[in-house]
Image 1 (tube, one colour):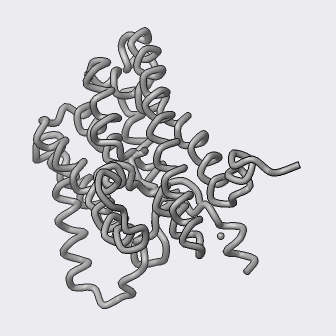
Image 2: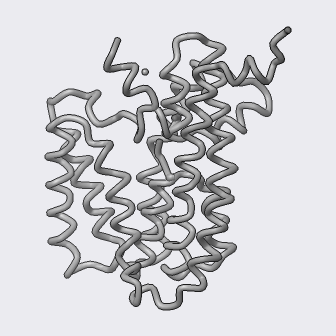
Length: 259
């Protein structure tokens, strides 16, 4: 009996990884949706962030600043700083996948940590294509569906402080960030930036400390002579097991916003 093309597609390692990552990452959209509306954004503003920004780390950074009372400008600045990595991924994927026509625009929107890691974790060009589009489209659809679910649920919670959610956006962002720190130098930079943020909080408006931390990180990176490849990995490596034995998840399986 001949094997149909859907069956052949599901037998693809990249497709299987992309689908599993899509489900895991998409479900996390519930957290973003709930935290966003309890941070002061309405349902449609929350959905706009997931549909248009579509980067988990940037989205959590944005609502973290808003929840802390920061200005929209500071929130956009924080989100932009986190989203810059997607531009770096885009340059790599443009060479790897060479999308043409309308696919270039679609690929730009779907370039996140998870889709990048899923694609680059493969060596076969066809599998790289399948991994990128499976993870990118799957996460985009599910992230937005579950963002809507979380936003509707979060709107029914009332005062976020009653549930301790006023600080949850920051905690969620840290949860996304910490696994990305690979090697001693990035961890040291993170600690220094955290200290700079804490010292700046009493003296500057909400949202500005994260921008100060970014300047500190950039300055350290400029003068540092350590390894240049440390700390640049996507949020999630979908092929951890494979890599250990001789190949993400998640973001390209990222990051990320991600989410």
